[in-house]
Structure formats: C-alpha cells, structure tokens
Amino acid sequence: MNLLVGGKEQCSLAELEKTYQEKKSKYQNELKHTSAKPRIRLLEAKIQQLDTLYRATREKIELNYDEPEMVHSREVEPQAGESMDDKVSNEANQSVDSPSMGNAFPIYLIDGELREASFLETSKVIVDEEEVGLEQDGSLSILPGNRKIKILHPFFEPWETEFGVLGGKSFPLIINMVPLTCDLTLKVFPSVDFRLFLNELETPRIFGETYKIPLGELFRIKLVARGYEEAQFTVCYDEVGADEKSLNLCPLLENTDLVSGELPLTLSHMKTGVTVEFRRGSNFVFGRAESCDVKLSEGIEEFHSHQELFISRNHFSVTSRNGRVFLKDHSANGTKVNAKEITEEFEIPIGECTEVEVFWPGKKGHTVRRELFVHGTDSVESGSQQIEAKFIAVYELAGSERKISHLLFFENGLRERQSPKTVLPWVISVTKALGSESEEIIDEARMWAAC
Image 1 (cartoon, rainbow, N blue to C red):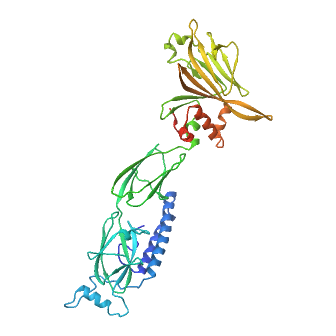
Image 2: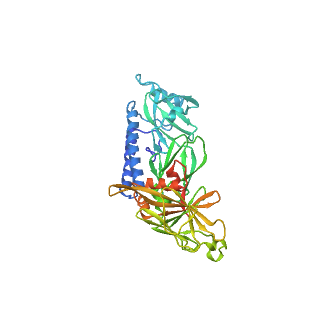
Image 3: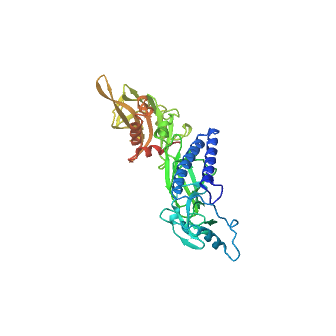
C-alpha cells in the first residue's frame, strides 16, 4: 500500500477520502486481472487492512477535526516589522473562542503502509528542537506558526517535516516512518517448493531467500510444502544486521521413505549410518549366490574365502504358509537351528528369537550365524483369534555383537503400510524392530532414508 496522500504531510479529510478510494480501486482492478492465488490472497488482505485501518483512523480524527485552511510558509506574508510567527499567531488569536494551540492528529504510515501503530508513544517527538509529549487523545498540541517536527525511534529511520499551524485548528498529520531491518536468509532442506507466510499473510518468495524483517516487531514465519509438515518459528530483532535460519522440512509420515519407498529397498539411518535391506515376498532364500534375498557371504562370488565356500549358493529358505513360517535346508553341508542340525522343515515360532547356523564340516563351530525374529499381528478368522506372521527381522551375529541387516515382509505384513488408518501401528512395530528406543516414533521414522 503506497502513501494514501501522495507524499503530503498535511491534508484535508476530503483529500484523504479521495486518495483512499483511488488506492482501493487500484487494488480491486489488479485483483480482477490476476489469477495467481498467492497474489489474490495478498491483495484481498491488503484491501481488508486498508478498509479497517482507514475507518479507524478517520473516526479518530473526526472526533476532533475542524477543516483548516492549511498554512504554508509561502502563503503567510508578514507585515513590515512583524515576524512570521507573529503573523500566524495574530491570525489565530483573532477568534476569541479559538484556543491558541493547533492540534495535529497523527496518521501512521509504516514504510508507506497504513498501520495501527503505537510507536509514537515510545518515540522522541521534537518540535522546533524541543521535546514534546502526546495529549490524552493522542494528538500533538503545537503553537501556531511554521514548525519543524522530528521523530526519533531506535527501530525507524529519523523522520522530519515542516508545516504551518493555525491556532485552534485540528488537522491530520501524515507520519511516514521507514523501519530499520535485519536481513533474514532462509536455508531450507530438502530443496522443495514451498509457500511462505509472514504473520499469516502469504508473501511472494524472493530470489536468494533473503527477507528484510523490520526491527522491534514479532514475526511468525511459516513454510508450507506439499508432503511435509508445516515448519514455523518466530523472530524479533532489535538491531540492524543479518541472520540465517536453516530449516529441515519433516515429511509427513506417509511420505517418509520408510512408508513410501518401493520394495526392494535399502534404507540408511541418518545419524547412526546403519543400513538395512527391505524385501517382500512369501519365500526368502538365504545363501552365497548374488540372487539370494539374504546374502550370507561377503564380496563377489569369484573372490569368496575358503570358509565361505562351505555356504551353498541357495543354503536355506524361509517360507510363509497360512500365517506360519517354515525354514527348510537346501545345502550340502547342513544347517543348524538353535544349535541342532535340522533334517526336515522346521517351523519358526512367532515372537521368539531363532538362531540359525551354517555348518562348517571338519570344524567345531559354524561359518556364519544369523538370528531370525518373526513379528506377528493379531487377526480374527472364523471367530477364533490367530497370530499371523507379519515380517522377519534378520540379525547378523558375530561374537557378542548383534546387528540388524534385513527386514523380510510377507504380503499381509505390508497391508497396514498402505492404509492411512493403520500406518502408524505399522511404523511403530517396524521402528522398534530396527532397534529404535526413542519415544518419538515419527521422528525416528524420518531418520530412515533411501540410499
């Protein structure tokens, strides 16, 4: 909103009304010819602000307003031997009923925009080098004559003007203060498109994302990006300078890689660096071959160690049938489950740790060890409660160390992931399986990002 009165410090109410209508018509005309939603919202807010504050300002002035004939230095011609101040003072005192003082009622403009402001109460107001105070009605009582007024405030550039005052006359005084600012630079991660709001008013974004924030005013800054939670913070600066804010936008739960990533998927924890493979299916193969769902050897097949050659290419498999999980050995050298070699299909219990070893012939011990933990879910079928296998957490065992390497999901274990109503319980069970001890499950889910 530009200056209502075109740069004048003094004006009549008629001039104020005319300029107000011109400014409002300008915004309304621009509103008709724009289709950009942010610009539409901005213009509508400016029109509403213009109407509200103009009415409030006019009502305040009309309570004490007396249409003056404005006095400027070039219009007042003193007689011989008479000073300019004497001339204006004598004219004002010709009316016995008029008080000797003139009353200026301020209209506050902040950087050219009409605002409700109380900064004048905390400013130093100087008239002809003498500091003055406000009257109870918010006006300035000023002696008749040509006067120079200066306003000083730590949050604004100094403002001053000269004008003529007639005794017993009230008039609006346009005070246009230019705020001092602090440069705020926004660094937003990830680099996505977002909408910016300053004190709930959408603001066009600026190249370089550096915004001038007026001093002494509390600003609520909000960023809205599709697929992410709203990010907001407040700032209030008391001196000119520069500040930088780095914001990490948090994806909505359903948009985290943990929930939205397409399987097979490899996720890495942003803080710990732990990497976990996610797989889906009804039958998972463990072995030395590159094609296995869970590879039990390191490196490529041409460079396997002598010890790793005792791992069969397809050593054993884990299969889901009717909500139950079975392990079957396919190797030449054998597989042990809970320290016992199996010769037939073994049912892995749900909700218990099961240790699986690849047998090392001629040696006391094993080639590799894995721990399997089958996570289940409750479902009701045919009137009876049944616990069904949902997914398997696979852990590498080396000495006393235990490290998660895979999550193997059966199809029924992914249904909750696909429903907005059940995604939260799914995330809770998965993040716990991944080893999270944090109570902030949503924040922990965001820590897992696709590699």
